[in-house]
Length: 328
Image (cartoon, rainbow, N blue to C red; front, side, top):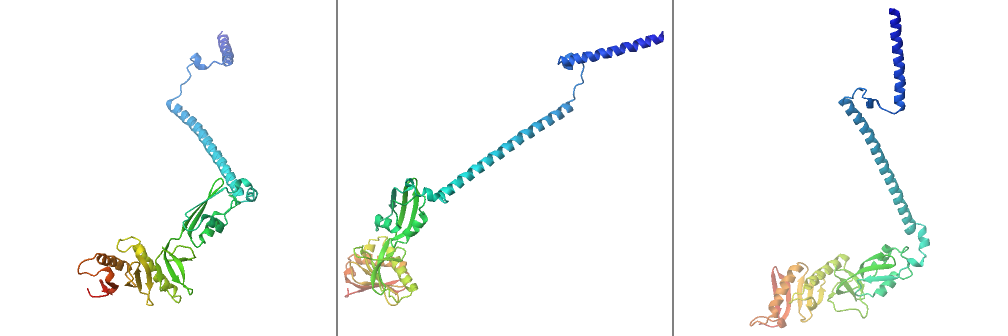
């Protein structure tokens, strides 16, 4: 009897296990979760949940960062390729083999040439001198070469040339500014001296002659001696251009140099010589206009400018000698 009961118990348990497995299969087929049945599934601890979320976020972050890096790399690659293409095209258009092709197109020919800064020389003469014409091409012309050619003109101190797209050329020149005439050379011709004390061009018939004249520089003088005398004359004339009423620039007739290199000045209105010596030009100029201020004012018992025979600025240190034609 006991054996039968034990056998029946185990047989019942086996059937319940089989039924349970069938139920589980039906439950999976119906897509229900165990949580829907409140089966008492074990909950995850807080530590497990935190570890799971950290792994998940790390995986997502690595994926997004990888996508961003990949996108930036592709963008930089495309930008580099585009820039390289543009530069290559520009080279072939302006400097490379394509230049000869485009250079023959009438579209790129110059239609306007603007020259500014001309005071003495005519702009048309300057165009001719530099070989500028409307047959020139914007692509094939060389602005630097043109500016060098213009600067070789005797009257041009400097020149700049600039393209103005699509069809214009802008030329700006700075001319030498004459400050005086100088008599030099074996033929004793007049030449212009600029405001930098340099002889830059010979005077031709019909050109302006209303400048002070520098004389006494012998052809046999060395370049160093010539430069010293021209620098002294230039400094004196520069000071006179300040237009002091007693010694204006237009009242300077001649700046002469003796065999010893001493400077002698002659005024337009009065023929007497003013001896300057060879040094301290600026100081002596300041003393001279104060002396002339006294002489120009007719004071009783004082010498007048008409009575002066000569003035020696190099008489003694800080002393000026005014010699008259007669006592008075």
